[in-house]
Length: 133
Image (cartoon, rainbow, N blue to C red):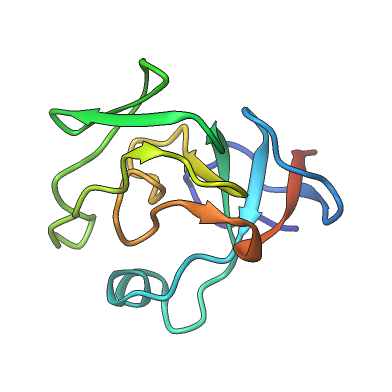
């Protein structure tokens, strides 16, 4: 898979469609359909690649737009998108079975910090990625 997003520091990813994502893995998934996703990425967005920051059973909390997984700070949410649209905060609570809280090393990454993405669940997952270039 070729990565064209600046939210990941590599451009080539080997995709394992049989792997089960674990904490810290790079996960490749189809983003949910939402107005915000369509406005930013088009009607047929390419798959997203993000890091698994939380797995089923983990507790996600938020305070002052900072997200925590099991009490450890993992991400800070911006108030507005790069196009100036307000960004609603993503889900908190116990991550459901077969779902993940995902994030990016990039400050402008569009991920589980935001309601338009939310939990990433098994039907959305394409596979586990391994950076190769």
